Length: 249
Ligand SMILES: Nc1ncnc2c1ncn2[C@@H]1O[C@H](COP(=O)(O)OP(=O)(O)OP(=O)(O)O)[C@@H](O)[C@H]1O
Image (cartoon, rainbow, N blue to C red; front, side, top):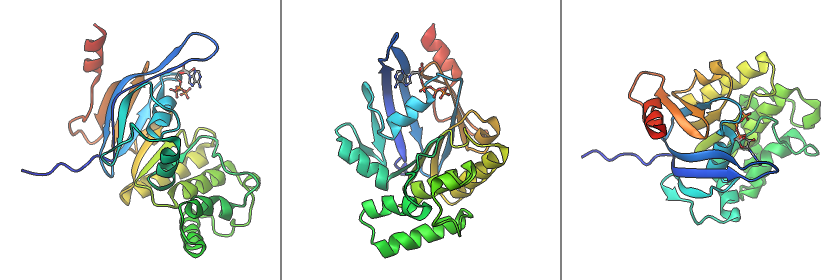
């Protein structure tokens, strides 16, 4: 019998309701998800569907009301904030729409920081940073401050920072959402390149062209997976729209 490889990420029956000023927002309403090692999954769907909330849950940036998440087969149910922080340093890279770089640190320091926090030697952190910045076309920008860079350059720095510790999983929340078409093409190309080298990626995007570069596109609607399609035509690994319609009947 063949062994099934451990998924990079698995979620079971995730539920999250936000309690803000108005009525509660049922952002994620019972999501099951499995992402294979090396898979590139895009999550699309209308504004307010719950995509960002899902990504925040998967990265431990928000806690689900119920449900479980496994990273590389390890259940995170009992993770403390500190354990999630360590996971985000070593196992999960995260990039956001607005880059979230530390504005008073240089490009080099922004990229090296997660490596140093993970206990990597300064020499090794410098070498990793140099290699990634070269790969991302940012050689010569090491001493620049984030505010001196274009949006596309800042997002490439954010990608370098997210990948400096070689995390097995990259979560990207609208990474091109504040970029022009050139910046969007750049980020799309880079994600594809990292994916081709084996990086597991979960990408939230409104951009259909960007989503089409993934192996698999999940359509999110009203807090649920409405469709889950492998783009190469192989059988879908998750629920399809029919399952959701059945659920609603
Ligand atoms: N911190 C919060 N407090 C209260 N409500 C929230 C919070 N975050 C999200 N929501 C609500 O939860 C729902 C899902 O939001 P979410 O940002 O996850 O959707 P989305 O699909 O990512 O939307 P967009 O594409 O516009 O970013 C929305 O109704 C939103 O208003």
